[in-house]
Image (cartoon, rainbow, N blue to C red; front, top):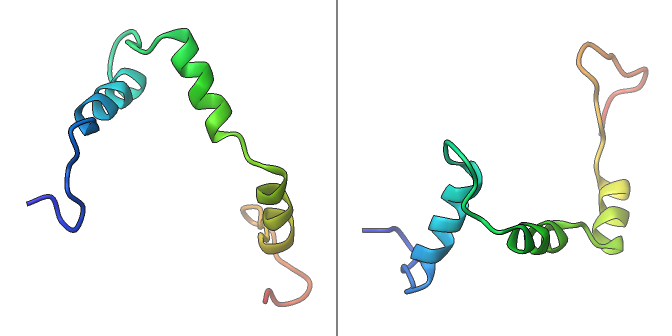
Length: 69
């Protein structure tokens, strides 16, 4: 019914928290929970180094001089 992933008991709490962040009206997530989520989502030095090495940023309307990889 839910695809390959089984729902766990705390999924309801996670979904409620997400709805509080993205749903209409005021957020139901506490300030400390929002700050923890921000810190957990912050990229690590390894993430930043990998992005620097692997990502090519192409701006809209910009044409590269050399073909992209």
